[in-house]
Image (cartoon, rainbow, N blue to C red; front, side, top):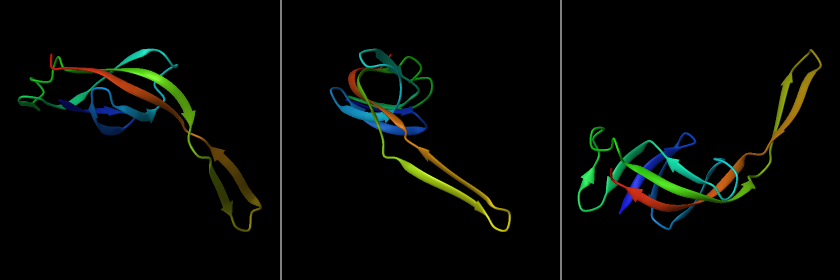
Length: 102
C-alpha cells in the first residue's frame, strides 16, 4: 500500500518502511503525522476528500542534516550597493511507520 502526502510544499509518494528526506519537521526521535494525505492506494484507491477524511501517515524523525550552501549576491550599478548572503536548508530524514485509511 502507498500514499501521497504533502509536506514542506512538496508532494511525496511514500510506502511503509521507506526512508525519505524532507524539510525539517522536528527533533530526532519524535513521531510526526503527515497530513494532508492526497491519495491512498491499497485494495482500492481512495482519492476523494470524503474518503480521505480520516486517512493519515505516521513517521518517525530519524536524523537531521543540512543541505548544500547556496551563495547569493545582489548588485545595483552606479550606487555602490552590493550584498552577499548564504543559505543552508535544514532537512529531516524520516522513516514511514504506518499508513491508515481512516
